Length: 419
Image: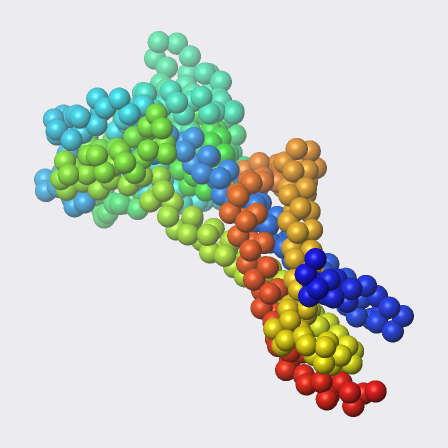
């Protein structure tokens, strides 16, 4: 065994007059271990939340959104008629592409929805039958058929139905069968002055996609109801595309980008870019904050080694008298710091792995209903289990170097004076 490492290991053992140094070494080791474990666990949980969010977003069938770059003249700031859209080569080729699972034309507008004294701003989307059938599969509560008509018999009139999200229903206290008033900010000419557009709907069902933001601000109804509400017949405002493989949305847009003249195509990553950016920023902030725990524990190593150097002045002088080089003396204390800090990094990494495995398997931590899932999500990213220990180990090495450099600069005479 290298004598430098042997001496460093001997210095780890406590003696009667160095019990404080041994306790300080244990505290430094424990602090580094807790810091490393906390960083890995927090990053794994936050990564789990991000993956869970992405899974919920792609489940809503909105993988690619196509909108006009500019308003087409002669169509009242809307888009071109459906016949014109299907005639466009790009849209026609997209609709027949094997990568497309569903292509849906929509007419949407921002409105204010009111139920008694409760109001909320939402986006109401008029969709076609294919899209409507998919939305109905996510419905958790639905109105009875007799709730949608005002009378029985051949002269029965069916109320326009609307599907609202679970979060919006909870906020406004709505249940299937309730009536709501939809008010559009765009005005129309009245007998005396301009008046807002108003239409009465009945809550036909409550859908649940698992994305609270969408469930709070998006409602669906048939295309005809929105057309009559806005007085825009045969006009659409956007095209939603659901792909067979949501992860291929970027390559799908690149494939048809040149053909989409005056049209803007964005995939689900672009549509939620601000959300993902904020989550990455939060993850970076948490990493830096918890990294300070490792840095503070590394400062304990600095103080421990500095005190040890003062304690071992005599031994250092003897070793130098016997021919030990400054590099060897420096190596003794660097190795001791590495043994303390490296053990803490190892224990912290193994402990974090064990805790994450327990969270993944037993799911014993419950979350409030506002979260996408009631259990704590954990994602095992190899980068966390490699990157965090490496960064922490480098901090430990740096912290160990400065006291070791001071020990290497001591001369034999400084220790001889202590005899």
